[in-house]
Image 1 (cartoon, helix red, strand yellow):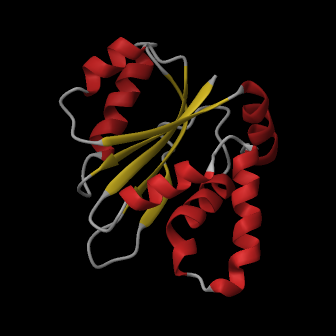
Image 2 (cartoon, rainbow, N blue to C red; image 1 turned 30 degrees about the vertical axis):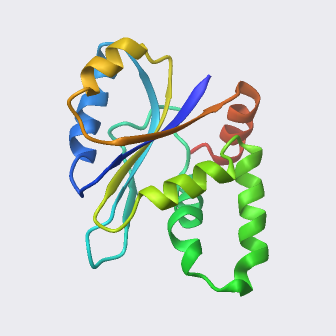
Length: 161
């Protein structure tokens, strides 16, 4: 089963350190990182987003997936009611893939100006080893498990080619 996890840091630093830790854990075969993207939101600026190629595996999702997800989380609140119908359709589409409204809402409320976040799709994590590797870090975790069927649907729709 694949897990979409969001590691949220209270400052604009932390993503790079976690990226390096995940690379190390992956090399030690303690986790399989399938794809990752980051959001860094400096104070007084717009959020900066991007897919992390260093963590993207062979089954990485396309930038379209991350762009749509980040748009739904970070930019939709700034659109007016005229886009409400398309936003609703987008929310339904993501819920079809196991990414529920509460996940979106909680992420939106937690990743705010001055914070950063690393969004990671993983599989096969050795939980106790991951906890040991991350125990000194300050972050909030929001996660959702994607059942195999919805993961396959997600990949069928958004896999990079």
